[in-house]
Length: 526
Image (cartoon, rainbow, N blue to C red; front, side, top):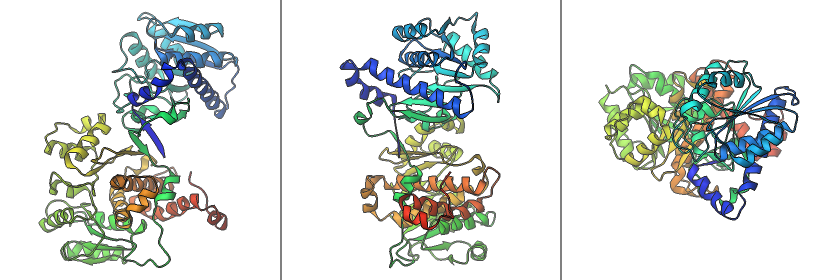
């Protein structure tokens, strides 16, 4: 599991080390890790180290010091290094070390910003070390002009951009981004990942995130944000017992579909079946039920009420268009049942404003903006997209539900203010019906795991947090299935559902090596 922290949390963890005189040691560890990351990236691309050109954009604070010390180490490896001092000064010891190593120093001004931007654009590596976790707001003055020009001059064949701790202009706490920001290929971050690197739009600029330990890790508090990895799925996904049966394995009720969107009900049911539900019961219009029955003969279809239907969890909303009042009432009844509920799409407008933690809402950015407006928060879709972590936090706090915000990075917030960020998927997941399959996967996991408090306690997860953890598990599984189904090209929602069992099987082998050896025809997660 990846744990991410705010800038404030990181600075508080560093404070005892700084007070004891270990500041220089921390900076040297960060610089050493950054320099090694540059070397690895160059080598992985078949570039020669000797003679490679490095441009470090250095601010006057500790972030600039990290970059200058790293550039000094690279200069000693025979690389041609240039430091652009963006704020009229620099960390004194780091600058002295850089100059002793033979580095070239340029002082940025309005007059030479265009020239220095062109020079940096031609370098093999640009180190962005202007602003760190202690900065507020974005770049100003000549530094802003330099970065804007440099960003505009980068092409597909340009050299690497490596951000030092965070890309300058990205808020380390929230991911909010203050333009201009130079998009990094890699962000080398120190001590632990920063929450803003794992939330959009910050994740747009962070590239691949590498964490360099610097010795403060045991002093870190409870993380602001967590990300499940494939190994976590291996530990958390349910496994049937020897004497399990279809009822004990989780029965999911599905209220979905309409005359206009019958396929949404089918895809939701397919997602639930693929994710291991012991039984799926569908409630809805007879015409839609017939479509579901033909596509998924395993599903038990009826036109009864929520109260008459015995399930362990409910899925409501996919494909509901608001014209069917009976379906809307079923969605409300499911939310009132006290059982775990996944509410998507058409169910969101029908539900009460205040719910409960076991209700998982799954809006996209536009739907979240509508929900927040109903709750008195004036935030449009661009506003949500500019501050995804803040928006999902507010929604969970106001509704008292668990909220999963769909997007390039999927964020999950619980009303207890526990947060998850998942981003395993492929861009091809942005296809019609993908969210319906995700709803089915969430519903199946709620039905199987929602009652099993001990399952999460044994994994070190607070039982109150299990609803958010289940939603994050589903997002992770759905994303990995999308990658598997896509294989680098276009895909359809149905193929995502088809890929879920195979990904589940591969994931389970991460915690069962003997089974892996017995099934050597399979292959590990990419």
